[in-house]
Length: 89
Image 1 (cartoon, rainbow, N blue to C red):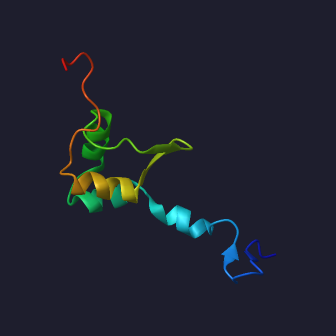
Image 2: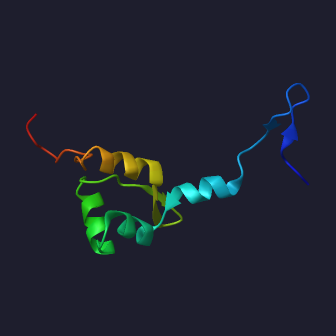
């Protein structure tokens, strides 16, 4: 059964996004390590927990990161995403 419907007026496909497009956008820890370049998994988790990089999403107990969010963070020069508790402003 095909869930994508064709619009009769202009022929464009209308319907939900293919699941592969959504899944491909999320990165696992190994992919994040490779994207950051020779960084260990433990270092990535420390950076996330310290608020120095995007935290990502927790899905069924596993952490995943959005590729676009990490790329934007890297392009911005890797600024901290969260300030420390009790820090003066």
